[in-house]
Length: 356
Ligand SMILES: *[C@@H]1O[C@H](CO)[C@@H](O)[C@H](O)[C@H]1NC(C)=O
Ligand SMILES: *[C@@H]1O[C@H](CO)[C@@H](O)[C@H](O)[C@H]1NC(C)=O
Ligand SMILES: *[C@@H]1O[C@H](CO)[C@@H](O)[C@H](O)[C@H]1NC(C)=O
Image (cartoon, rainbow, N blue to C red; front, side, top):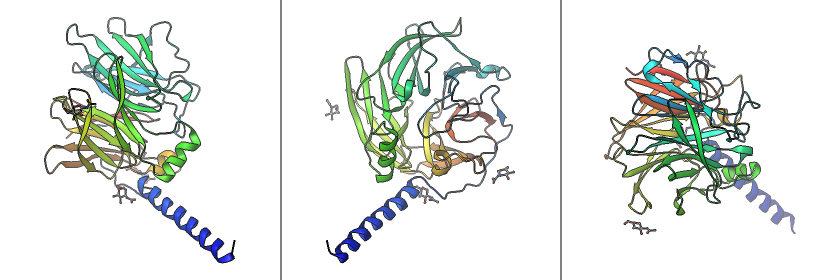
């Protein structure tokens, strides 16, 4: 090969890599710094030190919190400790969250809980808790029945399916049916970094029921949080690395069709819909580098964003709480209950504050 041709090819490769790095630094917001925004009366939740990745609040004020996620590439302060589900009664906030017991037979030693979702059977008020689990870094969906009298999670079923290859979060549609987001196309550590580097939009959303499993949405950089509108007709999906909140219409046959896409600034993580107002709450990572490359001298911050009137022509996006990591690092979820904001994190503590 001639020298000129070689140089030209090397030049093209370098230009391509440089362009990819620019794209990547944009998607991960490598250089974004945020101004703190405080709320009154913020307090840390007692006993939660190793993550509070997802929070589900039942209408009666009982909250489930998933803690102790082990996930490739993300920090974990207690890698030997199995994951936990905490229960916290928001009507008795001075009490500590309690770590729920599991019925015998469920393997807690490999428990690594990620997204959670609840389903309440209207006939008998039975509460089902669906949990994305990563035993040995694989994906299963665990279905529990919550036995409130004994504070026990009774394990009913483990779901595995080839289409549920790398699930991040779920929204329950029934005791055994749900929509699930696969945040990466590849499960392998190296391949998923290449996926991120090349900006492959291969992440998707899957509908699961015992009788049918299929892909219902695709084309996301990293489909993460998922939630349902209060009237149950729309599904909201957070595309973390796309920085978008996606609205999809849900059809009777469980298909989803795109309605609109809202661009945000943050690397949004989980989504929670306020049952009273329909507002969408998300917590996110202001700067992707800080959360993916943990550095105790340059902590990952937290950012809570509220989206109002998503279905109107002018949704209102508000940064409600922002912290530089001095209080909580790597926020992943924000939920509201009776004038209070609850913020959970991927691997750190959890905090609650008054909403003004
Ligand atoms: C962060 O990401 C958003 C959305 O892609 C973009 O508009 C913004 O310019 C980025 N900020 C920085 C500092 O990279
Ligand atoms: C589901 O229903 C929608 C709306 O009625 C329709 O457009 C779509 O083709 C259906 N999809 C399947 C897989 O049946
Ligand atoms: C983070 O914020 C706190 C309180 O607002 C401040 O004291 C501290 O210096 C900040 N840290 C960094 C690294 O900016």
